[in-house]
Image (cartoon, rainbow, N blue to C red):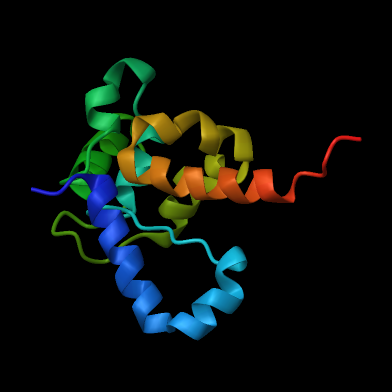
Amino acid sequence: MLTPRELASQVVEKLKGLIGAEDYARDAGRILFAVAVDGIECWLLPLVFATNMAVHAAGTTGCLNTMNRELLKKNLSPLSNADGTGKNLSVYRSVSEAYARRNRLFAHAERNPSLHVFVEQVEAIRLREKPAAD
């Protein structure tokens, strides 16, 4: 079984192939690959679980159901209907809004393996763009 990092890496390689070597080489510095293993809901888990619930927050499978159960426990609307259809975009926006603040994204990166891979890409770009100290 592949780790989340290995799965994300394989998806990135496939996407690079679809983009094409020439186009990718030209634009590589401007491309970020956000690969959520199992589903984007896995990246949202750290936002709804307390720090001491790291096992749930680091999940990579069944994340939509886990998120829905936790939101309902908190008397909040779930991300989707019970059968996983009819996703509620306003709830996704509301929950994910915390990631709009960059420090929050970086703070939770260690709590989810594929989110961590994405944040590593963001940090690499940030370091490349950081002005050199005089």
